[in-house]
Image 1 (spheres, helix red, strand yellow):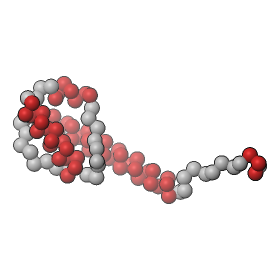
Image 2 (cartoon, helix red, strand yellow):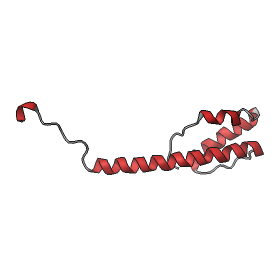
Image 3 (tube, one colour):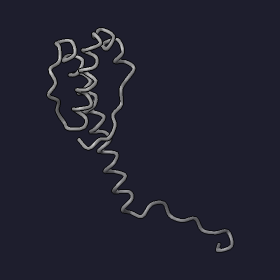
Image 4 (tube, helix red, strand yellow):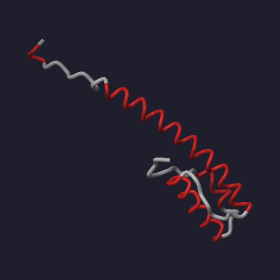
Length: 91
C-alpha cells in the first residue's frame, strides 16, 4: 500500500474493548504493519485476529476508494483545471 495514513472508526470501539492491553497493542501494530507494507507478521490472539480481519476489509475498501478518487483528480488536473474568469472590463 502507498498510504501514509488510515482511518480508524468509532464503530470499532466495542470490539477493541474486548481485547486485553497486550492484544490491543499487537492489533494496533499489526494494522500499522498492514497499511505500511501490505501485510503483517505479528502473532495475534484469536480475538485480535477477528478484529484485524474486519478492520483490514474496511482499510482495503477505503484504500480502493481513495485510489479511484486520486485517479479522477489526476485526470481532471490534466485537463488544465478550472477556466479563468473573464474580467468585467474585457466583456
